[in-house]
Image (cartoon, rainbow, N blue to C red; front, side, top):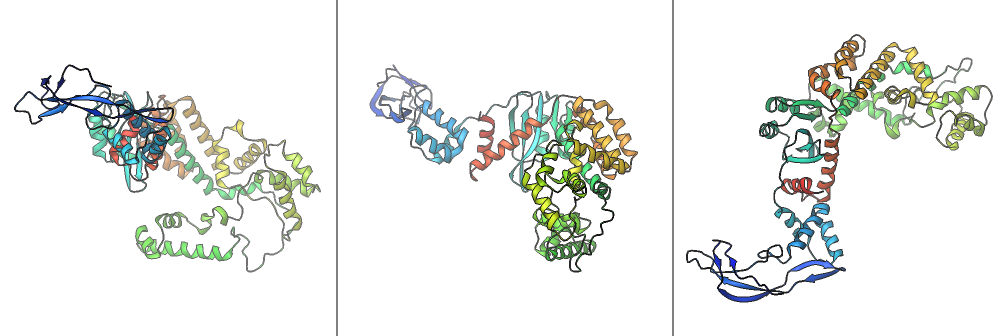
Length: 499
């Protein structure tokens, strides 16, 4: 292919020149065809620069839209490889390009991404803000999303108050700021965007209410024993002296170790040591020290494989099985057929194993009280979504515990406010919560009261931060896809430019 241009402009001074110095060939690679690499053969001209003051004596002509200086690819192939890099990053993008028939290295793909122009930041009217982690627990950034178009508009390299405040101050046209309940986001939005309405995210409000409800149920765990029927006339044989009847651990050795560690941590806390200091002294991680310090008693640490009464899908049907067993029905298949219409979705093997344990164990095997988390799920669920047995067991708990009955009323009234956008009823809900003996809800109410305007807006306006949370999850994927090479500039381009 030969160039037919009459002249060319000097890339340095812009002077037009028609004095041809020489011609030479270029072989830029083009978009592959049929899995084979396509190479163009171009004969281009080299010109003299007519300006004596110009430092460039000669220059080669370029074909607009096809070539650029010092490039081995056509513009079409260059944009294709950049699109592959935006979607797959360096290593995976290089593998995909080789499958197309273009041999390219992963570093070359990343250099193409670096060479892309800076994205134009639009002017959003409703913006959502949240933090993302580039190194969890240590390094964080801030992502801002246009809630109306559901597209990210900018990434900030940190989550400092000054960075977000400066970003908001440069955009006075922002009308709504959707955020979680982090205090520094609230302070920045108030200081630098006073004209914007702040909206607290509804999911975070419901999540906070769920945590407070679970703490309230755990505080009244003794009331849950009403769901376990007493076995009158059936005296339990005494437990072996080496095993404690109330121990939820199968291994007493493990139980003693946890009790000793719990006592040591609390003794050091009472002596005035910080949690970080305790971790260094006892060679424990921060999470371990926190779990031991937050637990009032060692029994609050029952989790996972160490828990003696782990929850299963059969737990809520065990009282029914116990009653039928006492009535003389010991056929596992018949009992399984009876509980399936009641909502049981487990296997026959679970029912058979439970009855086998009742039949062979030297000690009576009965249903255990439901875990506080299970009862919390009943309280947080819509009543019509609960099975018949779940409704009956929840009704028994609420009839036995006035505090949990009041808790259920508050949760369901808040759920009605949240789903029907009745934010104007929030002050009345806060007053009603403070009238009951529910310390965990009092703490929640105090936090909501400090952010009352944003919470009322979140319970009234249609905006929320759900789309922002989705982009935070997407940033995690893009960051991990680049295996440690995701510097801020490269990560920002991928987040803002990738489709």
